[in-house]
Amino acid sequence: QSALTQPRSVSGSPGQSVTISCTGTSSDVGVYNYVSWYQQYPGKAPKLLIYDVTRRPSGVPDRFSGSKSGNTASLTISGLQAEDEADYYCCSYGGRYTWVFGGGTKVTVL
Amino acid sequence: DVQLVESGGGLVQPGGSLRLSCVASGFTFKSYWMSWVRQAPGKGLEWVANINQDGTEKYYVDSVKGRFTISRDNAKNSLNLQMKSLRGEDTAVFYCASSGSGSYYPDNWFDPWGQGTLVIVSS
Image (cartoon, rainbow over all chains, first blue to last red; front, side, top):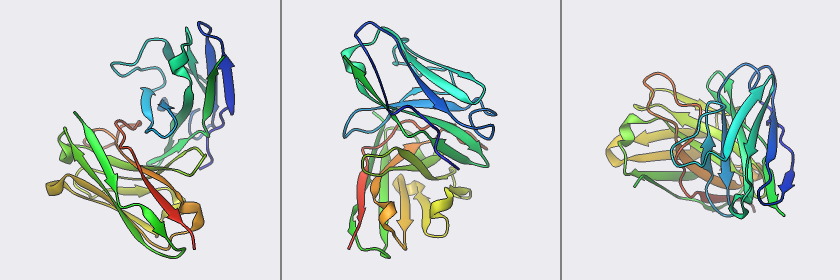
């Protein structure tokens, strides 16, 4: 299983929207609606933001939204805030009880 | 509060062994699939293994098959990862995480996560 492809970094000003892409293949992202997204601050454990492509756990602000088209999933952060500066990881079910993560994207709030 | 606390990490020589543990509290541990996910220094996350509620189903990423063994002790609310034949590329922070309470399948996400334990494989 190869890691999903994410941009190394994205940036935006407070109040703007940023979108992080997550590109897989027809064996993972393209065939399963099982993409999740995680937020990780330096030295901290990841936190679940989105699951099943678009669903948000309770407590996650609705500024975070997920989508998918073909082999690419996306996480959009609307109304960017300073506290959103962190690393973000996507993950997809890869079939046969395997899961594959992306390499991570650093979000910088300018 | 739900809490997962990992332990057992440390410095080990290449070819050596190490056993990680994760103690759970605040939820009915025996009802949940559990997973190990690792993160090499400065790198991304990698799913390593998971186990079903009674320990009869275990799945591994190809790179650790035959070297790592996941297990659990529901009486002690404990998840374990026995690692042998360790290599430099196994150096990482290892996190335990819950994978849901499905009867036949785990959830396709990981939540919550422990704080992790660092494993360094070096001579």
